Image 1 (spheres, helix red, strand yellow):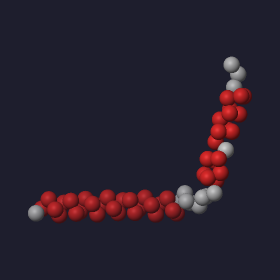
Image 2 (tube, rainbow, N blue to C red; image 1 turned 180 degrees about the horizontal axis):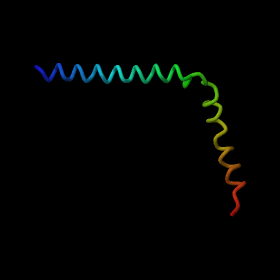
Image 3 (cartoon, rainbow, N blue to C red; image 1 turned 180 degrees about the vertical axis):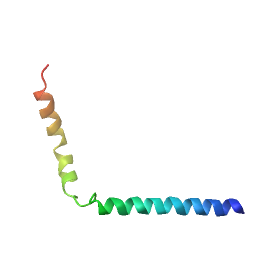
Image 4 (cartoon, one colour; image 1 turned 30 degrees about the vertical axis):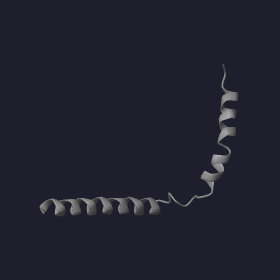
Amino acid sequence: MSVIYLLIFVSLAVAVGFIAAFIKAVRSGQFEDDYTPSVRMLFDDELQETDTKNKPD
């Protein structure tokens, strides 16, 4: 029975850790720019092509 209490405590500690990490990410502004990643995905191939053209052989 004591193993169940230990598992509950560990799972609650992990859950609190994830919630704290999420709150820290939200407060630091990680989720504020939701437009740029979608645009960057569209132009990723063009950026790689220009990088290879500018490199000397």
